[in-house]
Amino acid sequence: MGKFLIILQGQGGASPFGSLMPMVIVLFIVYFFFIRPQAKKQKSQNAFLDNLKKGDEVVTSSGMIGKISKIEGNIVTLHVNEKVFIDFVKQAISKDMTESLNATPESK
Image (cartoon, rainbow, N blue to C red; front, side, top):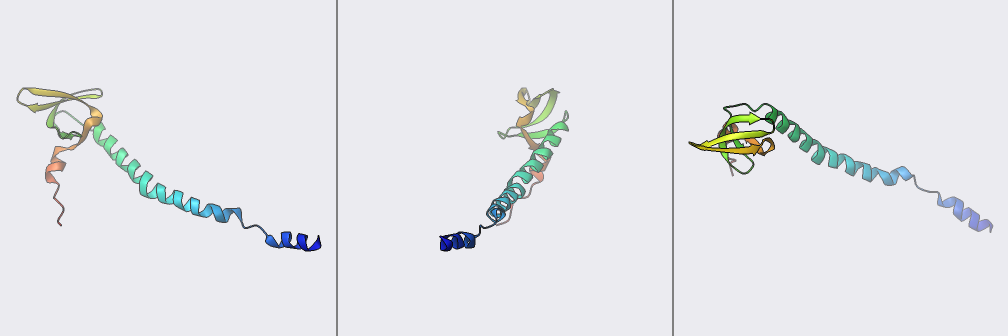
């Protein structure tokens, strides 16, 4: 019986924080590489949508290019061609047309 107690006392448990440390490190990596950049991107997109005004040339998420002719709440009307006006939900506007035209293609 005495040897059994000595063996149990000698085992000594490892710190529970040692097993949690890898999980904490993974959570920090996920936050800094995935969550934080996406939140920044969403914040800048919301600021862009809030600053839309009549006359801006924009590109929609589907690739439609047009000039904003009217904004009513969450609906944006684009003047696409001479007599063609199309209504879009504001969130479908992805970027400013001038930014798209000025973007330089990446060199290979």
